[in-house]
Image: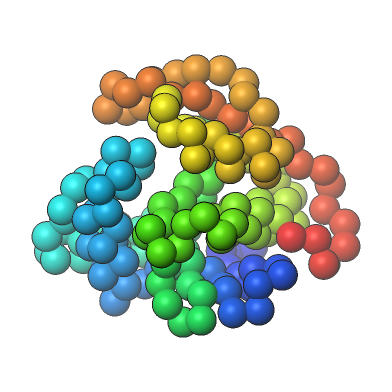
Length: 179
């Protein structure tokens, strides 16, 4: 696999892009930790301090440099509306994740961000992509269905919460225009 892309254009959204999160992008981590339902449905701790948000951004930068995960800022017209990314699941496959601010929701932006990431992973030769949803997160379950993920089982999050595991089997990459 080539190194992680620093920027991904979102097909069909002229003003949207995914930009790899850098050290100076701690504010999006800070902001998302303050959205009431983000800590409920993700791995964000609630109400991060600036110091902890900076540490989270630094951790994400290090994971990207190590080739094990990439977190992108989901931007539209230059405004950061959330994050989306992927990380190693075991020793072979990747799992996608995302979190959006309220002003970025309900317009398909999270779905398009996940499709963009999945398309990039497919072009790198990946054959499977995973997604985990915490039980009760109907918005993420709908996203998984829209993208084409299939429910394959249940599990337990590292913090003990029950999850549903989803799998997307990817066709072989072909045309460069594919997401």
